[in-house]
Structures are given as C-alpha cells and as structure tokens.
Amino acid sequence: MDFNTSLRKAVKTGNVLLGQNKTKDCIQEGKAKLVVVAENCPGNFKTFINEQDETPVYVYSGSSVQLGKACGMPFVVSALAVIEPGESDILNIKRV
Image 1 (tube, rainbow, N blue to C red):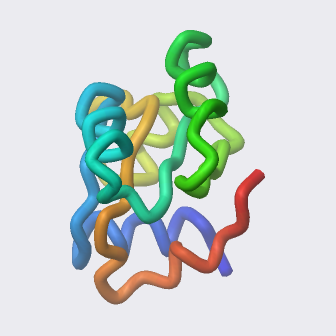
Image 2: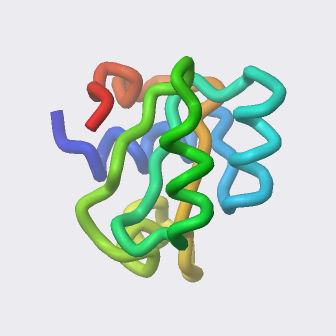
C-alpha cells in the first residue's frame, strides 16, 4: 500500500477533515476512524492525540508541508481525520 496514493484517494472520494481544530472536534465526537499527524505537528496536539486510545493514529513521515502536498492541497496540513475512506484503502494502515 502506498500511503500517499491512499491518502489522496481518501481526500478525493471520502470524507476527510483537514486541520488540528477540525481533527480534534472529530475525535471528541467519536467520528474519526483514523487520524494522521505530520512529524512536526505541535507538541500539545501530539499529547492530545496520544491520550486518545480508541482512535487509530498514523504519524506521517514528513513535515506538514509534505502532508499538505500528499493531500493535494496548496497549504500545510499538520493533522487530518478520516471519517469515511471513500474508495481508499487507507484504513488498513496500523497505528504507529
């Protein structure tokens, strides 16, 4: 599985929320099936993420700039929540 390809397909065909605030809200509402955070995501948000036992988390091996590009967006993305994967197999990724 190529993570970048799966991510882009999820963004295009599924329901993916971008940004720390939307991701946090999604987790608290119990809607997130997978959370992806960039390696350089702020420490306070990483602490919040690590306290969540029920939501799978994947740490993207790149910066927020690279994660934004992987999503096909022209801006930085430090965190995102996958609500519905659409035609993507992104939910097959394991917690890292």
